[in-house]
Length: 329
Ligand code: COA
Image (tube, rainbow, N blue to C red):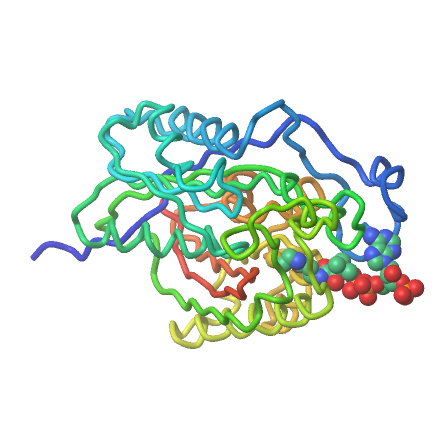
């Protein structure tokens, strides 16, 4: 009898823009200071895409090329390419489709999907189902956001947090049972008033919306913070219980990098030691859809085959959840 197919991550790539927006530079832009930002968020700098006219695809293409380089696969063998993003290049024409063409994935179909900061996590669920179905053998999932494009650099409640970046992973079938093991995904639309950018079909851009700066991201940080800790802890707890996993058996917690205090409090609530929580927020800030793949990109050389990794996110919408995955190489 053929083994059940599971969906394994078999390679990682990434790209972050060169430009570093430091806390010192932010001090010249808004009423803030390095000490406050580091102690309240853990962020020291973020990368900003400065190239003129460059959108999210500038980063997805580079992240995908870095993945092709590390995996040595022929782009023509990619079946599906998904871009998880809240900041597509343009409305209506998919960033994923453009990315696939630019990297030579001429036999792939491609689409974008958006669940704010949970986009990559939800994307993992989609990629896993396509692989498990047996229909597709190579799915590239890219998490990318040019958060700077929706930031108000006069609003200290948001602009100190977000940065730009992209990470890419390859999903392939495993017959050893490695890869995605279980998931718990949820959403609640009553949360959208607490974190959103009023730009879209309900809010087409107008002279007033630009003047009032309402097209930029706005958030109620305290509500988002509290809900994020509760829902992330609940998600991980649910996944651990459902899979009879003790925290000692888990090697890594890959949590969305929104705020170092959110990560610490989530780990503490579920009893996962701080050293198991992957953290790179100090370098990139919150890159929305890119935080999880950028963690994998940065920490890949520390993972061992069979390591149990618990992913967890919380984002605008609200969207949240957790995925349990075993590392495949
Ligand atoms: N620099 C300096 N001071 C600041 C500041 C900044 N950038 N932002 C706020 N402050 C001040 C406030 O005015 C307030 O001063 P006061 O006590 O004199 O009134 C004080 O710092 C505390 O403000 P508060 O808003 O309560 O801070 P906080 O501890 O809640 O931190 C966030 C603010 C935004 C960092 C935090 O709420 C957060 O991270 N929320 C979650 C956001 C998030 O993750 N969003 C994405 C979700 S995916």
